[in-house]
Picture 1 (cartoon, one colour):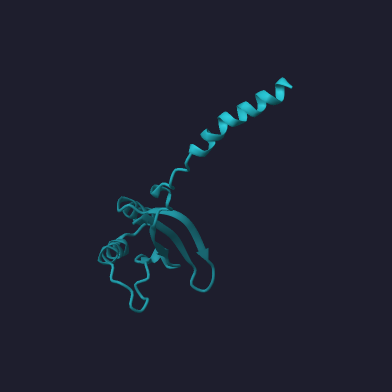
Picture 2: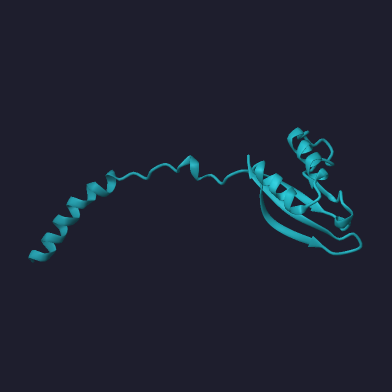
Length: 117
């Protein structure tokens, strides 16, 4: 008889504590980071020079102008090495997250780059 009485007493004392607990609001910092992307394109004629350029959606109709990427594209086109181009883009805050080669008549390799907005 004593055990059920202790159980009921313990349950009665923990009830108010359970109701007083609140769930904290979700942290706003838990949002996924936002990125912008571009592709460093290496064309098949790599050894002929001047075969590097950036693709960042500049040919899309009504695309917002991106003067910073326009300048980066001009710089990348003057470089004669993929490594130099990747180093330059890294110095501008970009990181390479994927590399993909497209075989065919005009084989191209694309280096997918991103940076936080």
